[in-house]
Image (tube, rainbow, N blue to C red):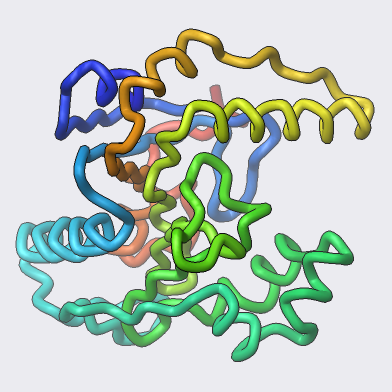
Length: 241
């Protein structure tokens, strides 16, 4: 979709089936449905507003009003929703400082076990400004490059969406791909070749702002139907195919 942006499609979306090998649990299926959208001339702050408007529209369609009941809690969907930086979340909820978690390669563990269950329990929360090393395809903050303009949306402890102010610097993206390949080789894994067509198209976006986000449809259905297990909102689970 980012390649389509580069070729002049300035506001695009898709709803598609996705596959992720090895993920299975109360909130995970190896096959799931995703809504993804991208905008030119926008950043991650605009994506936060998009999410507020989208979820509010779904609430109106369900005739549920501004209050949502999930896992016995009342969640207020009235915007604006809480904005919480990753640094603030670690200060508030983590047993160890953010810097220590990163150095010990425990960021994901602490996020999943200590922080995520506490996010969005009274009102939705945008967790944003991730450490630069975890920026993925996002751009770094111009005023403070220690942080990446990445955002995730949480409601009722569930991660619903993950988005970025997109990196549109082709050379920086190439450097990140090389670094990722090096990390995989050191870990004894196969390194992926650089996606040259993507990088060539990315050059068209040089100097432009762009933003993109993916939202899990299955988890959104869980929230609005009060289900705590993703198995309950799909027709078939892998074990029964």
